[in-house]
Image (cartoon, rainbow, N blue to C red; front, side, top):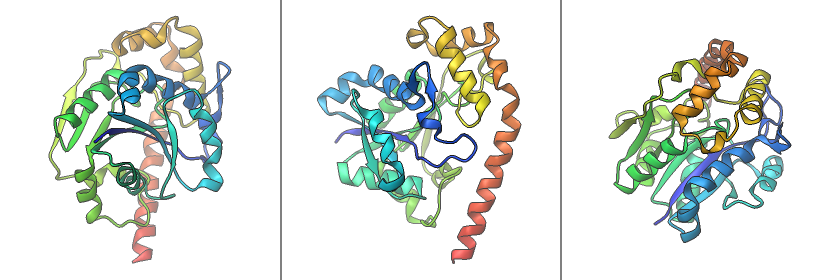
Length: 256
């Protein structure tokens, strides 16, 4: 059974409209993440032991994301619009996946080393594998399909978008730590205009960035002071994160 590498992305961002399609160096932002996956898992994607998907919501709104798969191994999967883990389970059942490497579409620089470690742990049967030690937006995690089914069995299925990883609490997990001395200085996730500027600077100003090990890449980001571009956003990000969880909880209570 193949392992899915699922990139969770959906149109409809309000803070940075159409962020996955925003131009960076003449290309849509999300295309860099799809390229990163292709480069790391080309062999597995070619022989069928891995499957790459953009896991998105309803077709009417999210169809434009399909153009990003051209020239890659990825394809577009339409699932539940409001419940991300249910969307992943729908993909796993339809494609017969044994497990999922879960990558947020905002995390354009998700580390190949991190995705590879999670992939390997899934092959070893680890229920909920994770990495740590890298900047926000560069670690990876995943889950076996069995663990996902178990986690969702007790969850309210109406709305699960923000912080939905909490449904796996209590399930067996393993975390592999990666070494990256400057990790706390860098924010590598796409939510605001300053984040877009950060990614643009990294891609345009760091020669050979695609081939750098993640620790060296982060070191270059800090050495060139690129990290300062969006360093002040973390507090606002986590405040919005908490507010969104509170709103989802309120919505779920109202639906009972």
